[in-house]
Image (cartoon, rainbow, N blue to C red):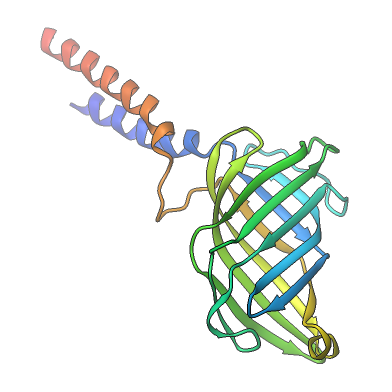
Length: 211
């Protein structure tokens, strides 16, 4: 019985590791972000950090690609005071430059899958700082469908706000392919481990019965 319990424990540890082995941490900054009630559209943000969860890390400060995203319309609150944007018609795309080990072409393409939180973080001098936080589901360059999260820090100069509400992105971070505890791991990645677990338990039961 102790052997079976140990096997169960080991498999429980292996499942999340294998299910999310190709998760990626993405760092981006710069570009433009247009803020309207119809949605937020950001283009030209530079990908400056790329790290896969097994330890590889691209040099910081280099252009490794680009990040662009868009939201649906504002559903509650206000742009200036904070609120919630819809995920309808949204997008989130990461493109790699092919340098420093970063894949060339589309690294990740997806869209937001839940309402997107929009928060006024601070107001320093003539600059307004906002945080856009949301969950996205899409496809990695490996062909694997994953769920991820992003937190984009957007700042707007007060004068720019009065003109066209065009801001830019400060250093921001996304996690692509990391576990979403509410969504859970992909069922397809769990099946091989469930099959292996059944085989291990069956073998141990036969061994114990023989003993």
